[in-house]
Amino acid sequence: MKKMSDEELLALASRGEVEMKQLFDRIDSISYENTSRVLDAFRKERVSDSCFAGTTGYGYDDRGREVLDRVWARVFGTEAALVRHNFVNGTHAISTALFGLLRPGDTLLAVTGKPYDTLDGVIGITGADGNGSLADFGVKYAQIELKGGIEKGRIDLDAVAERLKSDPSVKVLEVQRSKGYLNRRTLFPDEITELYELAHSIRDDIFVVVDNCYGEFTDVKEPKADLLVGSLIKNPGGGMALTGGYLAGSAKAVELASYRLTTVGVGGEVGCTLGQNRNMFQGLFYAPHTTAAALKTAHLAAYIFDSLGYEVFPTWNERRADIIQTVITHSREALCNFCVGIQSGSPVDSYVEPQPWAMPGYSDEVIMAAGCFVQGASLELSADGPLREPYTAYFQGGLTYESGKYGILKAAARVGRKTN
Image 1 (spheres, rainbow, N blue to C red):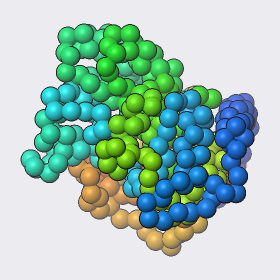
Image 2 (cartoon, rainbow, N blue to C red; image 1 turned 30 degrees about the horizontal axis):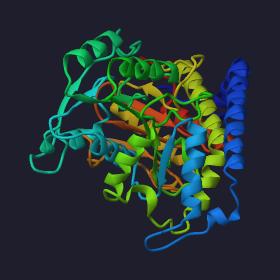
Image 3 (cartoon, rainbow, N blue to C red; image 1 turned 30 degrees about the vertical axis):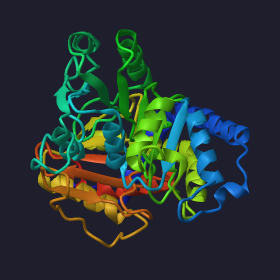
């Protein structure tokens, strides 16, 4: 690796910003359209200061909670939504959706290959018998790989249609919009909507569940699904939500999932908000803008590390459907240096040097840089990667483009130009 000076890296970034002006203009246009949609929803649902008041105990008649659900449904173009600080992470929200919709004897069919690593235990792919996984409750699992290979893959609609027609036990089609710890392309909303329409043309009793993490507000619309699921410390929390997740979709699917978050017959009609409403409303307001900043940062990262000789995916001039950028280093040392550089450019714990560790829910050691105001908030500047070949850094976030640029330059200075 050949180190580069700060002046050389700043000049490289400036050249990239000139070349990417049209891309950045398009991102700003998407941000404006999404912001307009958010503000229209706020106006139509009459958001007021009273919505920010917290409740305790049962949380009966929590106006803020009820209005936020309706605002979210409007923004995401769905019949209903369940937005709660009680969801501890995206995996919890997805797990709630799956347990809400699936019954013993049903089959969960993953149509984008194996889901994200943290769902292995939920499904029962890994873990001991008797731990409460879907498999323990008699739910079967199957998967269909993407058609055309990982990097250019599309949902294999023919294979999905054949399975739906031949196997009445299939109840849920699980879609992972983003790449997870795979170097595959992220799916665009239209592709997922096409799957939804195909599935419902074949079967009325099917549910399409989309892990929408990292994809929200990267386009002017969201995918059509029975349930869109995500985390509030990613795109839709706008950097303001302190925790939480959401489910948005058909009224029936949201209700069934809400029974797993609380209890049957109660669902989303209770639950105190403990003063978190303001952060969730304000985060949704910021979300299109902060997502735009993260997208620009991802484009810049791709430009810089491509120029330094590293394999990047997506490339710097590709249209994007999520905020994740991968940099393939082919080196344990380079991956660790990348994360150390990102950490040193963060606003919190910049003096800390990340170390690989056996992170719960992952099959390999993981190194993670996350100098965030909210712990683990991947809309903020962050990077991580499993310590396995080809030693890929998964980079995302940047609450502001300026801070994202700063972090990228720190990482580039630490990693240097590839020499072999």
